[in-house]
Length: 87
Image (cartoon, rainbow, N blue to C red; front, side, top):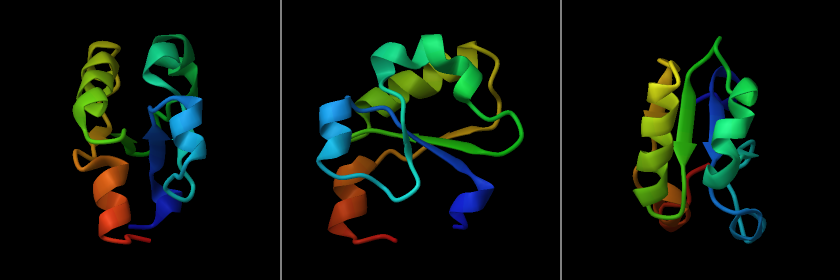
């Protein structure tokens, strides 16, 4: 995946994000997502993720209800990303 072609949103808290993140991911916590919809790309695919996938599902639903159609969810979260050493 070319990270320039997608927007990766890490919806974990700032502290969790600070403990390790996917390179190029933007941190918009789930609790602030609704107030930050203007930061979500309308021009390229958006991928949301969290620690394990549970909160990402909530973010996915919120974004869909807000009319964002180019959204995907990385259900494995940062845990799977780290285990598989994905770059």
